[in-house]
Image (tube, rainbow, N blue to C red; front, side, top):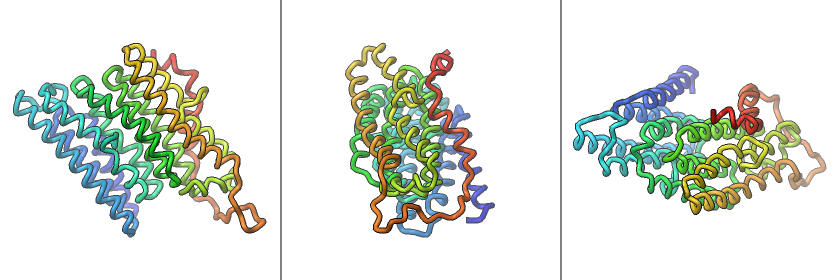
Length: 345
């Protein structure tokens, strides 16, 4: 793809998200979401491969259906109340439709099936965009309309997502699919806190994006596509190996790493609101996710790849990627826990 085309597509992607996040009219929000979807489709399908075309088709159909549901929800609300204002969503039918549309956009269970498939058919860089930047537009709408959304649907989707993100991830060997189920589980935690405290939702989203960006960037640098590939990372860079292990443990939510902060705050708030069962289910589902993070951390740092030769070094060319983004995201992913009181102030 030519640099001009790439820059046009990426700027359209950014513009779509910004339009959605800054709009107060439902039609403008919908236009932003459509721009976002149409810009990512060529990026997903740029490899001339059936898997990439299939991934782009699945992504397009799911996002188009979710956008249509969102437009229908806002039209029903305008029909009943006479206003297109995003913050004035009062019709019960509209709130249920909007909640389902946003859940589909994000890839929360039970409408999560597209996310692992699309990620597996994309390149690592495209998968990084889908799991981070593409979550911003729907999340901004969730943030604006948090008081109007259907709480029972959100909490049910949150429980299903955290459980399914843990369970389905146990069986995976492809790192992109593992990251997809990791994303579903993290988004479940965010959905759980949305009806109560949106500032914790934003904090969780920032930390999730930092951790996911760090993880994907390390997978891109080490060209790791399966669990077996992780066993040879130590030959490429011992530093990268240790950082990957710490990032995986942070994704799992172990103290004293940053990933513990959102889980701690969310469980604290759920128990304060007397949602003990919900908090227990979320805490137990975190153990499922932790298992496959630990398995990846173990293969990365403590095992050698089975070799038929006596050579322990991976064939490698001179690295072309700069590690500057890692310098920005890794401190956020690993060392923010002591700053928790300042974050909440």
